[in-house]
Structure formats: structure tokens, C-alpha cells
Length: 409
Image (cartoon, rainbow, N blue to C red; front, side, top):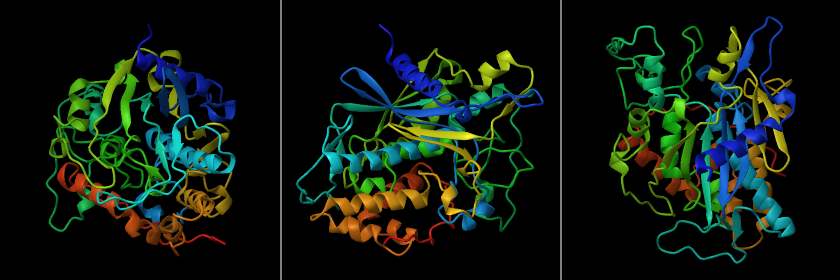
């Protein structure tokens, strides 16, 4: 029988191959062959596997651009993070579809009668992930950051750890965030790697963000207003065998590594620390760095990312916006952007009817920041703070894109 990891990888790779050519890396006029990371969320139900969302990408926004992004520009479109954002957009769209036509969902149940919150919950939600569904995440490359440090070391011509400089007095805390450098420092929060001549970013590595998802679930803040978190956690993280090192992944994600302070931890509102298992596949993505390097002498990372979710959502992303659009143009906002996710959530809340006025009031706030600060999201905020303060210490928040508003009429 085919191992589960191969079944998950196969359904993702098959779905990617069905995307139009404009969503895939290309061969440039100068002969450079492009490569790109791929990531996806797959649902397993009764022995069947369904690719719900996938994404490619490997860029993020410089910290200096965050205050002008106005909810339009994505802050981080590394494949793993964009796949999770795309999955959350799928969930909002799926909830709305269930309300409108009442047909069965592959992964969601609809609580048609508004339940009353009990003493352990801050709020009741109208949807939940089916109890017989498991969510798996596929990544074609090792997540950047702590989980991939051993792979980074072996890729160096000289694997001697670089000397870590002593921070100067008065340096801002973000200076302590490392990119891909100083690999003698392990088990630490890192910023996204990038060229030394590139503007600095404060986006945390995919290793750090995936580690946090073991506490907050795959749900984003806005999606968590509608869906119970208990069964929305990653069950298995699946990577190609050549992109796996046991010591790195265990240190980064497991309760035997840096997440040990959270072992067995439960919070209110259905949140808990649920470490995912890790499995490997021998199947390879045809546009991975390794695959392209085996076929071409000159290779380069693709600047074009892609996002797809079931059944019809598909986009190309360049610079954090839709390909061909300008950063200041609202029409350039991805369906996974803060602005578009807020609008989709507001539309969904308006369809809920009586019994969920708290959600409607929350999403009707004047600014995105006010929505995120609403009491309905307080428990999720406590989960995030607890994880960052105890296990993911040194996490510096990427601020500056919360004051925008949208036309909610």
C-alpha cells in the first residue's frame, strides 16, 4: 500500500500540474530556469485525500513597506504561509456556500442552532471541522528558519559556524533576529532569510510560524470567529526525504525541543498545544530547487507566486499583489489579503442571522486593528502571547498595517 505521505504529496503535485502555465515557473530569455517552493493543505477523510489549498512563493515584504501596504499587499508570501492564508480563504468561502445552498461540505459541519458558550469558552462558533477529518500540510522544501539550519550548514562551502556579534547597547530588539546567518545559534526565532543587500524584513521564518500554528491551529484570527479550532490543527507535516533532518525538525517543532514549555498545555476556547507529526515522501516537486538544478546549469528563484483553492480560486502573486496590478490599487489585493479576508468575513457574518451578533459587531469595527482587538479574539491573543513568551522568545511583531478601513456598507 502507498504510504500516506506519498498519497498526500501525489494529490498536491497532481493539482499543481493542472494549474495554467502562467502560474508555474518559466525559462527566461537568458536561459535561466526558474524554481520555486510549493506548499499545500490536504484533508484526509475516510481514506480519501483532497487538496484544499496550495501556493507557491518565496518572498516577503520589507519592514519599511508595511505601513503603506493598507491591507492590500501581503506581508509574507512564502509558499507555506500563502498556502495557510489560501486555506483560510477556502474556509470562509466554504462557510458561505454552506449557508447559501445547505449542501454537504468535505470538511465542515454547520451548527445551525447557535450554541450557548459554556464556562470554558469565550464565544460559540457556527462551524467546525468534521471529527473524521485530518488536515495535513505538504512542503516541497524545508521550512526556512530553525528546522532547516542543518541543511543550511551542509550547503556551505565552509560549515564552520560564524561568530555571533554582540549587540551594541541601545540596538532595537529586531536586531537580535537572525536570517539564515549565524547557524551556530539554534532553537531561536529568525526573520525570513534574504540577500544581504535586500531591505530588511521582520517577517518571522516559516519554522517559527508553523511552530506557532501548533498552538493557534491553522485558523487565522478572522476565520477563528466562525470555526471551532479543536480539529483545525495540522496532523502531519510532509516533506521530501532529502529536505528532512530529524534533529532540526525535532528541535524546532516538538515538545522535546524548544516547544517543551508548552507540552500538554490547554487554553480556553478549544485551543491547546497539538504538535504535528512529521513524515517524508520520496516524491519530488518538478520545480523544486533540486529538480531544476538537476536539469539545468543556470537556475534562479521565480519572482511569481501562485495561490489556488478548491473549487475555483486561482491567482498569480508578484510583490505581494495580483500580477499586473499596482501596490496602491485596491483591485490588486489578493483574495487572501487582510482587506479581502475582512470583506469576505463581513459578508459571511451578515448571512448568519440571529444568534451571532457578537461576530457581526466585531467585524463591523472601524479599522482592521479594532477587529483584531475585539474581545471575541482575546483568547486567541492570549494563546499567541503565551507561546511567544514561553517557547518562541524573541518574537518581534511586524506592526504598521492595522489602521486601514474598508467600505462595509
